[in-house]
Image 1: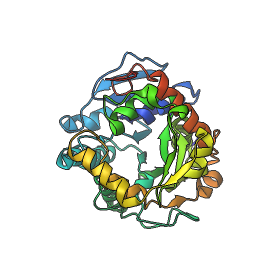
Image 2 (image 1 turned 60 degrees about the horizontal axis):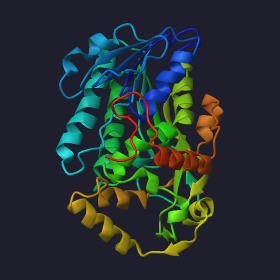
Image 3 (image 1 turned 135 degrees about the horizontal axis):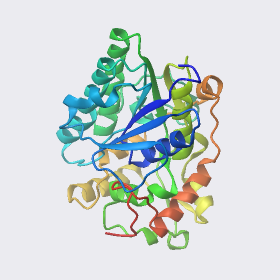
Image 4 (image 1 turned 180 degrees about the vertical axis):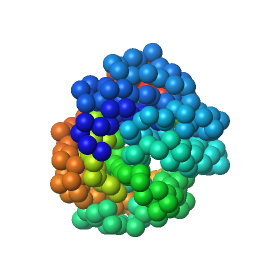
Length: 343
């Protein structure tokens, strides 16, 4: 797609953490003529050049091709993290819904598909050096999130074989945060009643140092910029790792929070998470915890050289902004992103 094309873009999952950043950047781009945001509930937020359509991928799949007609690119971001106790439900939305999106892209003859994969699609890998996009993407099979992301990687392999006319880009970002996503992510991973104001460094006597807990983070707006660049690119295909430095472990976070790391056995941490999840006190499952401990660190050279992408914030700056959002009930005028401190 040339720089003069890509003028009409459809974004699925447009009201979530990544979707709101992608829609905002596209709406501010003079090369974009219009943006159509698809979401289950239309928001009160109205950026320029943007129209909204209420679409539920689990029930409105038959009309997706009509929504995509005339688009130069589809950015597919729609994803459901919950209910973690009912993986059949998330499978219907995330996997079967995504397959319908891919089929609709082909039926509507959309020339470019930019798909939100994830670091979670990767097989277990090293924590002491980064891997590039050739690392296997078989996920961690016990975690629904990783299992679904990995399955869609295989689905896209077949889609690209059958539809070589469609330029397919797979974004594999690290954990994504911004001030406005704090309330949503607190509800998704910590539960509705976890008080955001408790996310204060002075309330942490120590930080658990769990073996294997070394991950990467990225500001959502920086990830959105990579999506924007991919929409405009006429040659970018395949997978792109997206992450900011430095990698985050207990030492880095303890220094950031002004506390001290204390070694905690992996089994003890997992048992506590499993107990809380089993009692429905914690939405995040112990299976996802297992996966996080095994995720590889990612090398982002390809995104820098082929897309011209560069993160503008460090991972520690991202965490600081997110913690501030937790304390202040950060959010936006969309249903997934509504801001609340608790409840």
